[in-house]
Every structure is written in C-alpha cells, then in structure tokens.
Image (cartoon, rainbow, N blue to C red; front, side):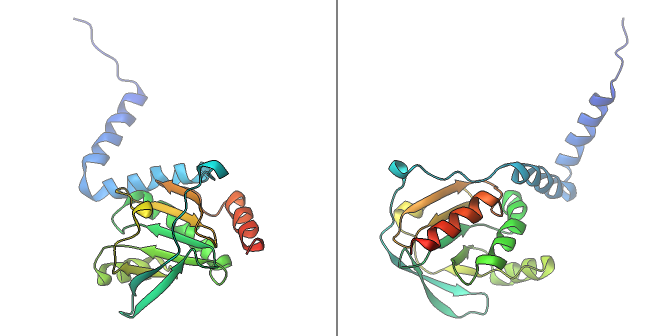
Length: 189
C-alpha cells in the first residue's frame, strides 16, 4: 500500500476549512475574503437603455436617535440607497468604502443606509467601528423596483429617479469611477 504524501497546499486547505467551520473565526474570514473582492470590484454602471426608473417618493424612516424622518429619493438630489446588516460579511467589507464616499459626498448626495436590525445592535456596531454614517430603519415597504432579497444591495439613483447603479454583493464604492459618476450626476442637476 502506497503512503500519500501531504503537500503544504493540502494542509493550508484543511486549516482554512477548519477555520471556516469554527463559529468564532467564520465571520472574520468571510469579511477578509469579501474585502479582497471589494478591492477589485467596482460597481457596474447600467447602460442608459437598461436604466429603470423609480417614481420619486419620500422614504419614511426612523434614525438611530429614534426620530421619524421622510427622505427624498428621485426628487432633485442624487441618492445612494443601501440595504445592509451588521451580521453580513459582504456588507461589513464594503462599509469602509461607503464611509469614505460619505465623508466627501454626504452633503451633496442623500445617503440612505437601511437595516431591519435592532437599533441597539446597530448603534454598538457603528460606534465600535467608528463610522459616521446615516443609518435608518425603514417604516414603509420600498417601491417594488427597489426590493431585493439579498444584501448588500446598493443603488445610485439620479435626481430624477433613474437607477444608474444597482449592485448586489460587496463592491468598492470609493473608486474613481463612482466618484466621477457622482460628480457628473451632480453637474446635471
């Protein structure tokens, strides 16, 4: 009977699998893998013929302080709408890029980050990571065209309601391509 020699790649693979099935290491590994994807994956801008439109509406939400608000989408200002969760590794991986984008465009673009989680959990998560993002809890069902079953799902919607980007999964939102797009969309307002 011939003995099998183990290669270093076999051992690395076995350790990786072991780490993935261990609950304490699963999420950090998934976040790391998604960060690699974010580093190379810039969201796709839809061709003009493929751009759908959402009728302008007011999004009824509650903010982290418990205040009810009504946020405009498709009404004279570019909107960045994000559906995410604190337990979602791809969401966690792309949030630093969204934070950087928000720092530079937060006063010019309506950033609307929506989650269905408990406010206390979200507040803890945001504070722990040092984010200063506009997080909201929806108080209404989104228009059908903005409904998606997977997270993260992010939209860039122009000032008239045209959906310029719909991206599901982690992406690099702080790319030159996205910054140029936002600059161009704001010029056209």
